[in-house]
Every structure is written in C-alpha cells, then in structure tokens.
Image (cartoon, rainbow, N blue to C red; front, side, top):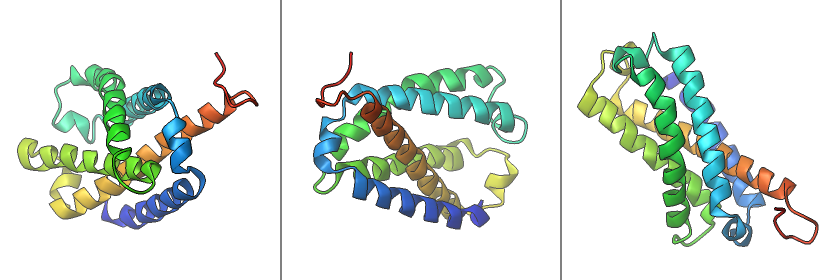
Length: 171
C-alpha cells in the first residue's frame, strides 16, 4: 500500500490541477445534479463489482460474510449517488472552485470508511495489519480523491457530449 501512495499523490495532484483548470465554477454549477449521481452509480457499481470479483478471497472475504459479495455492489449503486449529491451540495457552499472541493471532500469519505474498518471492524487482513493506520488513511484519501475526480470528469464529459450547440441539454 505504502509503495503505491506516491502514484496516487501524483494522480490526485494531476487530476485536481486538470479539474481546477478546465472546470470553472460557473460550469460546475450548471452541471445537473443527476448527471453526477448517475455517473456515480455506474462508476462505483462497476468498481465494486470488479473489486469483489478480483479481491474477495484476499481482502473482502476475510471480514465480510459471503452474502455481502452480492450486497456490496448493490449498496454502492444506491449509496454512492446519494453521497455524490451531498458532496455536490457541500462543494457549492465552499469558497473557491467547487469542482476541486467535490473531489477533495470525496477523499474525506474514505477516511470515514477506512477508520471504521481499521478501528471498529479490525479485520484479519494482512495488508491492513502490515500498515500503520495513518498510512492506510493517507492512501485511502488520495485513492478516493482520484476516484471522485474520475466520476466528475466522466460526468462533465457526458454532459458536454450531450449538449446541443445552443447550450441546451438534449432530451
């Protein structure tokens, strides 16, 4: 995990720089809430399916009951769009570029999730046991900043593609 942290530092800084440069506050405010929510459902749903399929035996299965193998992706499709709406709402209330704050606030979510994992669930997972809590939380924060940056960039891309030249959203 610690060996991947510099990669995620680079990715997070690069993506936040791109977002800050290309997604102006006025454009972010015009981006419909439902576009972010739908992209969030798709992105996190696909990501959790991939993670469950590839890391169940070595990670999730060590602290999750077998039935959660099917519930985790379903929960992601329901929970993450709602979370994206909260991130959007909060980011619009912070001075500065709300698109950047959307992604930074997404990282805070990972601190909450991983703190519960580390300090409450305390799984018998080698990667968790071999890393310090601070290292895990730093990596997780950066990882989620990158993930939420991808969600936002995909949402903006889809919104721009579906725009008519007049600027009105295509039905």
